[in-house]
Amino acid sequence: MRTPTGTSFGFVANSYLDFMQERRQAQTFAYKRTVINRLLEFLGGDFIIEELPDSTIENYLVHLKQAASGKTANRHCKELSILWNWAIRRNHIQKNPWRAAEPFPEEKFIRHVPTLEDILKVREVATDEERDWIDALYYTGARIGEITNLKWDDIDFELNTITLYTRKRKRGNHEPRTLSISPAFRDMLERRNQRRTADLVFPTKYGNPQPRSGSFLVGLFSRNCHKAKVPKFTAHGIRHHVATRLKDSRQATSYQIQAFLGHMNHSTTERYLHDLAVDRDVPHLLTLEGVEEKET
Image (cartoon, rainbow, N blue to C red; front, top):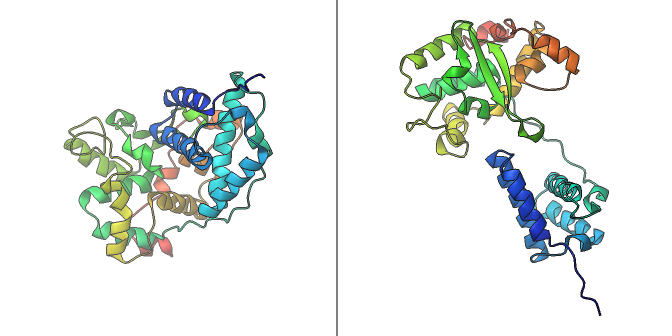
């Protein structure tokens, strides 16, 4: 009698993680590893990857939905489907059973978008360093990771521009976008430049990037929103506020807003033509000089 043979999921998963560790950000890699470990925990250990039944996949996704949410189940299903596709391309397996899984409906998450008044109240109670972070996020509409990694080499005071880099692209590619610097933002940057001690614009006291899971960034908005007695918002809430504010100003086109925020939904030609020059109008529509002036 022939002994059944097959490919160990553990072998495939470890090969996949080795491959991804060299090509993805640490946070993305950690998430992929968590997804794999959670599946192994549910199944009680390693298994033959070709022999994973559709019924087991369905039971696992239902388990995730009940333990967390439909969104979590859908995200894990997508990640595991990516792993299986990677294994197919390397001839470890021939089929991807995760493709056939029916996604769960997801409740739409309504993110709290702060008002300008709330942002100003938080600025009032923040420390000088915290206020600089808030202003940087506001005047650029940046993702927080774009500010943690911002270097002085990315700022050109002569051309009055700032270049931000994002990895929120396919395969984690590092992509820049260049913005004009508004007068108030320039004043803050020049002040910090006079006393800089590191290559980074917003370093820790040791000259390293602020860790996103560290106490400073984790508590930046929660503690100051509490002190200011306003509904809690986040760095991404400021980004949404900026997008809404630019849209309501009626002085920026939808493409200008997308380019300013670093989104990717216009055609390649439109994006290429627009990227030939730095847009010097959009940043000047933003101000933190007062609620009365801008809210009326």
